[in-house]
Length: 269
Image (cartoon, rainbow, N blue to C red):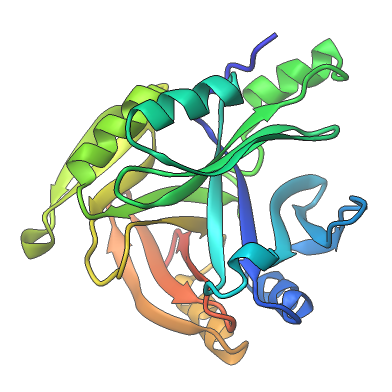
């Protein structure tokens, strides 16, 4: 059986600098009310963030092969077939950073960079041990990405050297369609994209970003300005916001104390 979630943002993963995993967990706990626990995976120091009973993100120490990189968040998108998705992406000009591999009890994943260099992951869920009820729940529940729940990811933003080519790449790979486009003046257009008719993110030019990258937005239920105060008090840096965006929402773009970029979105300034 294949999942109907193909193209849906399904997991968010923080890779932070060595010795700072606990500090990162405490930081995001203050901002997003996450409860973090060890995953129990053998040989891997991988922790899971939860909101209530729902898992929303993974946190780990930077792998040795990329230890010199600054800390970062990576977004994974659900696919029906990880191997096929990787082959299709490669044919379309993507680079493969990690070939498809199995995670026991979770599924099959791979890490890629799109033709403009933005890194992302794909995840094929392992449904072999799931009941029919669990599979139906996986097909309908928001999971880690849920725009209705605080503490979950709520938006996915691509900053790219060529957002037009970027949209073509991702729409071919994931079946996304165009939403509204906003004229941002010198920065160019902000092109929203949809999955199953719902806006799930936007694409734009680089702006101040040094390289093409994906930026996750996490939902909050209070005032963005209050969360900004918490971010600053906890050692983070806020680079933009609070700023109003379409839909009557407010955002802020920040870095955690270790340097990983993220954003928050909420209903009030």
